[in-house]
Image (cartoon, rainbow, N blue to C red; front, top):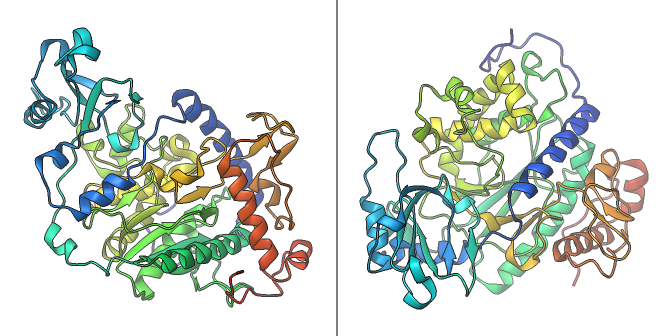
Length: 497
């Protein structure tokens, strides 16, 4: 039986991670996720939270803002009070009814979403109906309907911002540090693309003024320096001791241990950290969109610790919590997540031990598979009392399923992208034109990747290929790098004009 928490006295020999097996596990998991996500959710049913998030941090609180009126919008949710039997004169009254709703028992659902129809002409029989609903992590779920023809006004109740006055006084002190974790050849070239593109977007951010994008670190958890030390600011962390090394090639288990070493030994200028990954490329600048000191993260639809099938497993790792308490656990992994340096220091020890406990429990590992370390992070955030974590769906896109480049800050190229030569999207089939990072698991992609077909309308896919081609054109010695897998020349940080 493997130990459940990390002990420093490792004596067993080191087992080399099996990268091929890891890739196979990832591909199988991703194929499953494709079916789950895009059959059950319409890709377009998402709205940007950036505008409202930034506004809420800059203007004083008011009743209107607290109720968060979303006109021409209808939200999903489990009904806690039927609108056909519950009428109000205004959206404000409906919001107040949601805030005042008291569940009959401690296990009954609270109201955190309200939906009101206030225009007699367009609402018809629904006029003045006020529906009170419950939706776990409503900011992470797309609207049921939105547009000028939707007569409903909706709102999401969120926790108030603590220490708002203190946060307001921190203008100019909200810069964040970006960190990616890396190990192995598959992410070696991805790290170079990621760092190059971050520097490009940060330069544009600085040119525009009031930029909050700070320094950049590659967290290399291979235990020794490599050939990118001069090109990318890097912290070298040790992999897990031999007695904790995964025996199935799940190298991601090394990540929380690497982060623990970083927060214990490193020093950064910024007060905040954006945890990212090598296959994240930036497409536009980002301000610190945290509401006060609350962490904010991209929501993953498949992280659901409160679901009935997973709740017994969740309780194994956090204790005897109720379903309602489990719904307070955010549907996130560690990346992308923006949080304070203080909170990252707080969560890392528990993230490591929870991830090891999940891996070492047969039932947990079987249930959560290749996303088990993501569960480890969000359970650890709950256990260490980080509190409410806000969700921002437009922080990151995932083409080919997302399409609109101007909505997002980051492209996450985890899925294969397949198209016919006429531009038709061919999901589930190998396309006549395709890009998949797994095609370059051992060596980097060549320069001058073929452009997507002219008839292909996905702006994100086209942007991604342009970004990769621009980076490989600028970083010196790329052709030799492709043939050898070794970076014999380093980029000097000079951006193309």
